Image 1 (cartoon, rainbow, N blue to C red):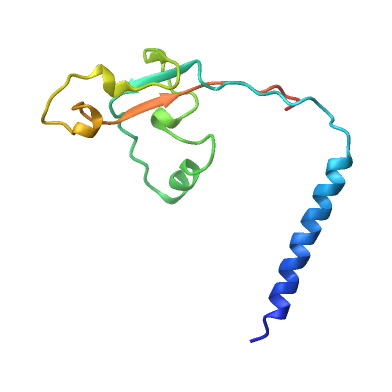
Image 2 (image 1 turned 90 degrees about the vertical axis):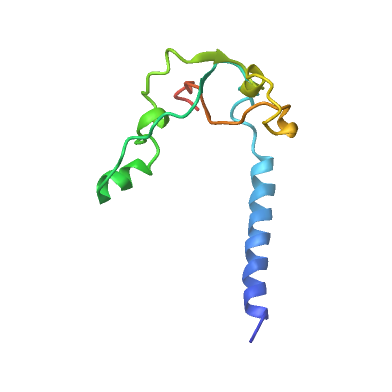
Length: 125
């Protein structure tokens, strides 16, 4: 087996990537970088939300695509009655202490919870 050929292809990829990085680093920035916290403005629902049953090839395919989800994963899902929370958020702390539960979780029950956050991007971004 000739290992030189795969190594030379890998080297070409690495070096061409490095050249591209060096070239783009010389370009002036077209816009200032903005760093935003994503911790505020979340919605929370304790417990599971049944997912609609999806059957058939096309509905299954569509459901796997961004923006085509159903149930609580759907972008237009009404979460208006969900609690407003900021992250970090520990919903288990709201439960009661029961020594039947796991010590590692402070004797609080585990479970399922949903978090959602809506936000908009500027069209320029």
